[in-house]
Length: 384
Image 1 (cartoon, rainbow, N blue to C red):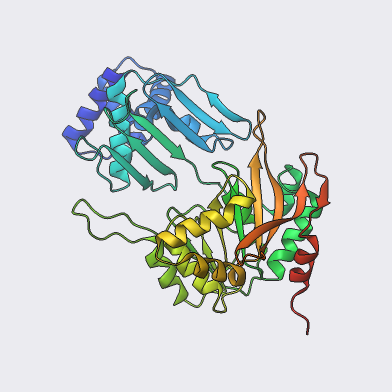
Image 2 (tube, one colour):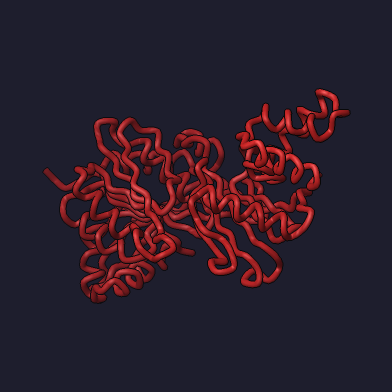
């Protein structure tokens, strides 16, 4: 198959033809005149995938249940689904085939990937997030990671049906959005933070203007007024980069009703906290954290690295953020679900901690935590 693909590639390059399905089929007939119509149609899809698509990964990328495709060298391709990681039967003929695919995908995203730039991170034209590392940095062969965007935003009702959110928890989350509280959606990698945040943003009043600031455009709220801003890495000369920090500042000048940071991971946390402290209610973000109790320390580390003192960080936290919605991913089934809804509260030592308000069990049952009264008070709003 690889020899035939190369022959078709050479013929198309020689004629200058665009590798459309029709052109690939014509080149196949020219190379193999004895092929029947059915064989040509079948081979044309495979060859075209090798020329302009994702090659043998194409069927995996089309599967609506797949969220991540992970290539660990030519003989090992995994997918992540709602049921967890699974090794597939997909194989590449050799290491050079994986390397060519990685370089072609990087080029499609306008990135360089070669011995002088052996790794890259980019968003592909179709919306997938690409990360690639070449040998010898990747000791087992070229490593590819493709994170696929959700085809659409899930509604809160659908997340309840899937077991991600318990029914009573959904009522609380709906009230949280309606009350325009500032919140973080937290959890580890692959716990469904983006999915839940998209569903919550879809509940915002249609008259509100939502500004999304992301490294890679993954949030897809079902809302009529959404503006998305996306970062850009520097070019080969090291110039032209646009960071989340830059974009948060730009978003604040665009009259947002809700400012949303897709994932807080650096100095942009300072701008977000400042915005939430100066009248931008209802703002939100996602944050990597293994447990809700880790959230203040994580924010403190990011903000202190950006130049704030510890006392300043906690003063801003106390006034800026209201709620943490924490997600977990169960094993071995891999179900993603909301585990806790917590509130930020200042402690007696002046620092801010996270207090559980609601615990959500794996069976859908919920029970109140010590922060339940504080959450209820915030949902009701300040006294008139």
